Image (cartoon, rainbow, N blue to C red; front, side, top):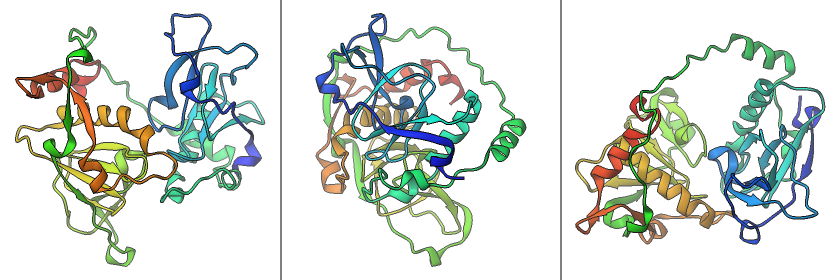
Length: 311
């Protein structure tokens, strides 16, 4: 079965966030603004409803055909869509679980659209599992509920006191190393690519690692960042950010990854590549203490978040 067999598809309202009025979700005349990002269910802002422009309906799937190509999400609220976003409406009644399954299946085809390729003409013909397979997977899926003791966030995130830092002052930045498919088989070493999902890991291969874990990897297209805990190999489509701070850890890494994704993703859309030379000049804002990044604050903030105790 193909996407077009199960879903109607149409181009979204094609809005630019800069032309919308950003407000809070407390305003009853507000909707989510969904863009071509691979995080936060595609939602980048809350905007005021424009008179005469009807939002897309809740229950549809948003699908990015450029930027973070094939990032696909089930939208549970009405929303406006940004550029190069298609809206998929199921031809039959599907449960939320079924829609989530198909959104995941569509996203798993993102690897086909590396190097800045767009999917606007080809995505309807992408093969997806039939309903019997979908129902069987859902039936056998066992999910253990995750609990947290962090119920009340106490730390204040006041960005007004943050300072700017160049990535090259915080990290040694190098390019990944491409390996030809005939060089390896399936194995245990993570092979990190410019994917927007699965923490950037495209597959597990048999080669020994080229890079040590406890670092950050960014994709050249889109500049999507992930923290890598384990030793790994990486394709030439990514940059590796090796921390200069000797007490760097997963909590600090996750904090900085969030900052990079928030501040840089939109700058590297439309197939623009963020190479090592570009990454060296990237400036991000971080909490500061005595002229240096406040590493302790970053670590403690992530630990204090709901489910931060389960990382």
